[in-house]
Image (cartoon, rainbow, N blue to C red):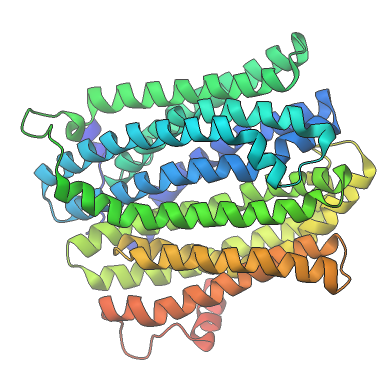
Length: 466
């Protein structure tokens, strides 16, 4: 039965592989975001705007520690997909073993660090005093859950590298339902406030990690290890780290840049913090189809690059670009027409809703550049480009530290500058991704003559897709 869930993407229709892989992953990512949405809606509606702002003020910090751990797991997934594409089963198993060893150590270290440093980090961000105690409490609960999140994502990365995007979804659905039920019980029935919402999330994440791990070890043939598979290889760890650490640093830099933006947001007071938290939660969902497409392209590119099928890598890239354009058209339309209604799901304060709706209309105009980042990043990651992840993170940090301050403090945009700056940073990152494609990708993959990613070619692809 499990053999049918392991997909060889080196043959068959690229479009079919990308879409069939992406659909369960997208559903899974959306369910994962339901964790955050459930907490946000229940906290915002049943505890209050200040508690909602407290949860939002912690998002960049918790993302920092999650990112540091999960980047290494992503690197292990890419190495696994390349060995699987090359049909090297022995190294596939050893890569799974070594990535698992790394993913036990890294979250323990960062979880403890985050737990102890939570008050200092929130003070650095200028968190308003009225939400500080709840923010510290929430960060510490999330640091406890870091090991569970990392292990779940480890199993997901390994299974997806083998072309199985369905199995992680099943257990994520179960844990999401548990999270919703526990949120209602802890917050609405027992009135446990922030502690109840955070406890529900921790328990749900533990369940998803436990169930996915048990199922993978019992049913997936690549998780059936012999004694010869169970050894720590310095060369394997080095390869995993070489790909994973730049991604971890990239994610960490993005988190640090988000912390810089959060500091600007905090300076405008609780109402703006609540509005930004609402748009941030919504845009976490907006990112999901792009992230899913990137993950699908990464696995597709990794397997075909390992199999030396460079023509299919390029075809996958072009296919991903066209899918992204269609997604963007749908998402922009939804935000422009229904942004206010969507923001109203989180809070009842009309001032917060109006400001959040305005922010969504601004940022949605830049979704096309956000999509470009994800498509190019997915393909480059699949073929082993470790540098781009790091460089892209540096670009985002520079943008987040400079553009929001420039717009809000010096150019008179006020709080609107917060959302405008997000779009501008996406645009800058999208341009750097394009240049990386023109250099690294075309040096590793033989691109058909006359098919460079130029503006006319991009617009032509857009017209054909629509």
